[in-house]
Image 1 (cartoon, helix red, strand yellow):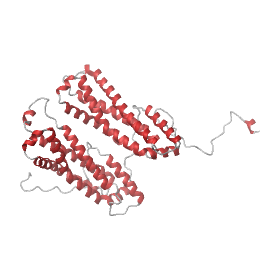
Image 2: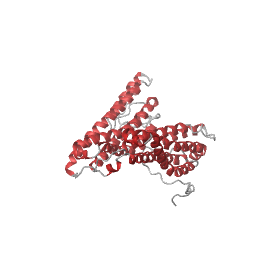
Image 3: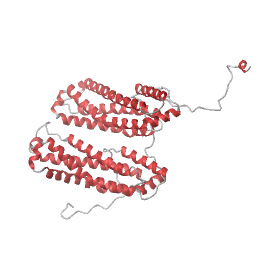
Image 4: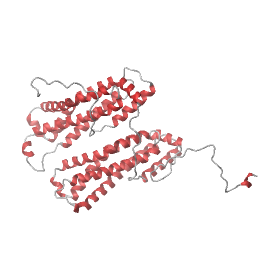
Length: 433
């Protein structure tokens, strides 16, 4: 009988059938639990929820960190109360959001790949989000310390206390909300009960093993179209891009003027004494449109570049459009603020100057959100909007690329100069030389 011929020292070689080794799910070494087919099924079911939940976390974490840091720093360092409270919170939010945005691109790369493999990418996404929260926490605390009169290292213990407490609070809230959203999504995914139960356990283990110190590298290059594909898509959709961007630029001035005027008259009712609100709106619109026109030529030059390289030019176009919205909002608010009765007297006072920074942010968020939504609506089907035919596979790939670029707008980025340079506009009679 063969069983009598067992030789414990014999070399048996390798099997003809080789199972593909599965990667570790967690940085700490917890083995993956789902088979390839189970992972694919759950990735398809969960990816929309993962996408929306992560994007929501990235949008809310910065403001939450900023508010908590400003609140706790004011308690630990009472000298900060000499600053306008609203201004201090706005400054804290600004610093925190910038820190979150520094991690945004690499998180979105992992998020995109989660459509094929949630189990393989979610651990890295979670670690990166926690790292972003910690970075935002530290940067914001350090920034507010600069506003503490006479701060010295004797306050370092208080500084660490703030950092630890804020990180623990915000990270716990972010994790709890993400985990709850994914658990609910699993329960409603319409997959077999056994797989749903298994997936919930996998998700729970991922959240319990987040490694905030993990070294998570970049997923892969963000450009996904080949050079030839980029040229083909660019030539096909460039006319649509030109029309959409031109319409967006034309809409910014009126929208900013309307939003800024409404919010400024609510915060500073004395503005209504200067005359009809419509005249204030016209002034805000005029200043906003000047900000738009100062960048219009450069933006349209990048639009021209898009005909040969959509993927290289489109992110720069979107970034510049958002920068224009921000500049227009800032200029319009500053212009109306100067018109507030008594403003020159306030300017001479120390530390207690009126703040309209929150209105700048609110106006930017409102108008930029509307502009982005409109651009996405016009460009989400690049093949349908183009005069040239694109193969179905390339059209699908282009749609994904456009959607990804719309998510990667960084209003603080420096975009450089376009390859195409239009002739500078001539000065009108009486204009500056």
